[in-house]
Length: 343
Image 1 (cartoon, one colour):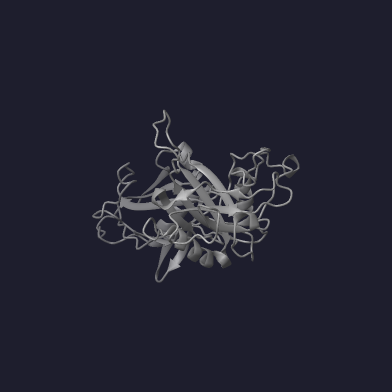
Image 2 (cartoon, one colour):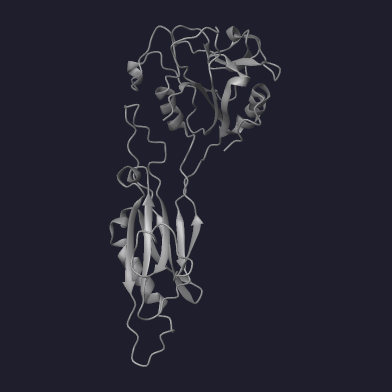
């Protein structure tokens, strides 16, 4: 769990970085300033602050600032790009080679934020099929009809509890057939007034893994395939992603991290009517990249204290179209190309 003290800034769209001093910032405008609150902070500045002008309804109407950030105290610096569209996981099971008189098993392990709370290693279900017995005088090396085998697996999977999380379909595959497993997008929780209910963290995303092997289900085979005893090939066609950096998410983050921090009024209720000083810089329909800086606070004295310093984090959200230019300016100040690559 991250106990870092967090300050959040959302850069207004089409507003240039501030120049001069922190007191010259217009409402919402962001700037990167040196230790003396002068701008611009440069790569030569060993210490800097992030500052933002307040909007008229924020009390008091002074500049909002991060704590002093010393470059040598930075623990993590990264950029996370927005994801504007979601995708679901798709897996193909193909190339079936089952023969008569065999047991074959398809095991699925399914994960989601909520399933991971209930199951330590995913919700695991195995589907075992006994192929028809070899007839008298029949060649035991002849493979069974793939279409019938696929039909049985598809029916078992869709009728099981896993049918709530993924769909199995029989799909033509050249002269044969394959099983296409497609994850479902779960129903997302409604946005709640509770700051603890953050629904933008992939709670509607389903991930899963498939294993095709001969013999009855075993816990070992549910974790790793036996390369010598598989009866089909499992291929991941698409990986799951969830939307990141959307306007509703940024609005919730502003509330969650108390973006309008003031010294005389603090009320973190999500209802705007209960927060007369709440002011948002997010723009509807806009996606934002995230810039994260985690750092140790600057000690002002060298005396021993019976206390442990908590690290701090600054989150800066910048519209996607402006994020590259902002990254250039921030990289020049942080000088942190080697601290952590973006992800």
